Length: 141
Image (cartoon, rainbow, N blue to C red; front, side, top):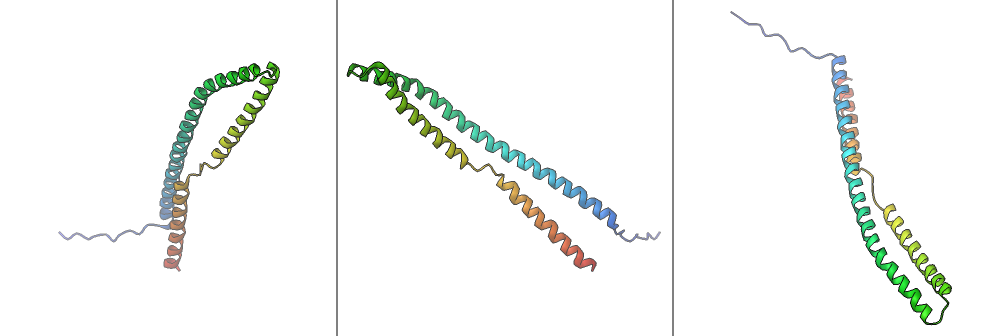
């Protein structure tokens, strides 16, 4: 018995647009997942670095307090009144602390938190979609 092969059915424009919509939705979801993963990774790195700074700061602070007390007592034994010794050392310590805070803030400002991989991927996707539209128009026209 002869079998008659049916011609390939061409898909309608509506079906093609439906497929395109589903694929673009999937791609956007994947890009959002990539952005989330990238931002989580960067936030974890910044958090770890901040934790190290805090732990080191606490240990150094204990030693620093002992040195401040020794300096105040040293000035006092040299004949400077106790209140003046404490005031003088307090001003110097405060100025040094302010400088450290300023440096820390500037270092954090220079940390790049932009999800570069996601931006590149989205730009690439945008170029592909725009190129696909141009090719479709050329074949239809």
